[in-house]
Length: 159
Image (cartoon, rainbow, N blue to C red; front, top):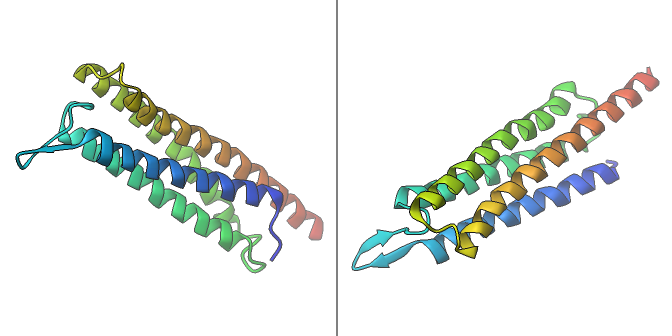
């Protein structure tokens, strides 16, 4: 089992996404949601449903990252190293996550503007975490595609 520098870098970036998703959930749970007389309020994003959507968005990214980490370790084994299907799934999943995360950036930016909380630094950091996640997914998509090209060249040279 040979692990390249590219794979280690991608693993570190995936860990960065996991940290950002935890930060997003912490922002929602500890800074945005308030319980007053058994009622839940989320004034920073306008409604409780928007706060729950923030938690759901973080969980979607976390599930995707855990799947991609599993694929990364599967591709590191000798039997599955030259599997073309596994090589194409990782760049595809990363590419699909970029517009999803950018949509969350735009959605929460609009919701914070509608609720009047654009001057709150916590909301800005909350939205910037989604922007960071989309950037890391884009970077990982490029790195995994380059790794796939390198693997295919090695496979062709062996034949």
